[in-house]
Length: 434
Ligand SMILES: Cc1ncc(COP(=O)(O)O)c(C=O)c1O
Image 1 (cartoon, rainbow, N blue to C red):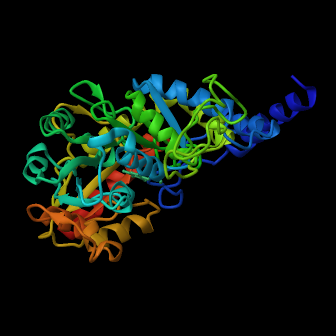
Image 2: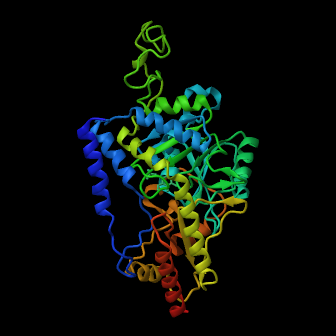
Image 3: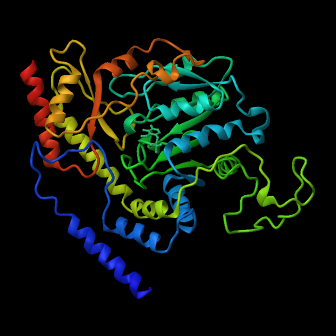
C-alpha cells in the first residue's frame, strides 16, 4: 500500500476513535433517535479509501456489493441504485418492458397496494400510467392480509406491490400463491425488512422481484442507496437497462464487447453494425449509485446479522416492558414470521383519556424521537387526490393509523438503558393520564 495512503487510513481510525466519546447516557438530555446509521471505524475507513482512490462513479465495489448482497439474500442478481425509491421505480417499470411481450403491464392495468405506507411504494404505479388499487391494513401488524388482497383482484389487476410494514412480513406465502393463481406479478418492497422471515424464508424471496433501501434509517446504510434483486435473469436484464439509460448493451462502463458482437447488431431502424454500446431499447433513467456508497455498503454488510439481532432484541425489550400498558395497542409480529424490525409501532386507543399528540409531545420533550407510520392513509394526501385509483373495502384502519399511530426506535445503537428509559417514560405518561 502507498505509505501516504496507509498513514491517512491509520489516522482515519484514530480520528474515528476520538469522536466516539459521547459520555454516559443522560435521561432526558441524550437524544434517543428513532433510527440512524450505525457506522464504525471500518465504515469510515472504507469511505475514505474509496475517496482516496477517486472511485467516484459505479465500479468494482458496486459489482462486488451486488454479488455479495444477492448471495446473502438468496437471489441470482442484484442491481445497486441511488435510493430505495429508485429501486421501486425500476422494479415496477421492469414489468412494462416490451421484452415481456403479451405479459407486459400496460397503461390502465391495476396494481394492488396498501393505503397506509410509504409513498414511493405506490408512486411507480402512478408514474407508469397504471392504476393503484388500495386495500386496508390490520392494526397491530400494520400489514394487509391475503384475504383483503384476494377481494381486490379484478379483471384488470395485473400485479401486487406491497411493503413489509416496519420490518413485519405480510402474509407472503399466501399472497405469492394468490399471485400465481391469478397470473399477477408480485413486487415485494423489502426496504424496511432485510433479514425478516416468513414461514422460515427471507422476505424478498417470495415475489418476482424485490427492493431494498440503504438510506441511514434502514438495516444497512450507504448514505443514499438502494437495490433491486431478482432471480429472474430476464427481469434483471430489463432492470439493468432501465437503470443504465435504457441501453441494450450489458457491458459495464469501461468494458467493451463482452458479447463479442459489438458491431454486429441491427436494431430498430438503425444501420447494420451500429455500436451496441449506444443502442437504446428502453426509455430508461440513470439511477446508479457510486463506488463510494458501495464501499460503505460492503463494510456495512459484514455487520448485517448483528444489526438484525440487535433490532430483534431491542423490539423485544420494548414489547416486554410495555406489555399490559392501558390504552395502547402494542405491535404484533405476523403469525409465522420472525421480523427484523424497523420500528416499534404504537396506536393510541381512540377512546383513551389522552391524545396521540400529547404522548408524542411528552416523549419528544424527553428527547425520545418518534416518527409517523409514514404517510398514514396515502389517499388523503394532496398528491393523490383526483388521481385514478380504486379502493376496495373501507380504509378505516388506515384512517386510525393517520390519527392515532406513531413509532419509536429499535435500531442497533439504542442501549438497554435507553430503552428502559423509553419504557418508563411511556408508562409514566399513560399512568398519569389514566
Ligand atoms: C417501505 C419503504 N419503501 C421505500 C422507501 C424509500 O427508500 P429511499 O428513502 O431509499 O428512497 C422507504 C423509505 O424509508 C420505505 O420505508
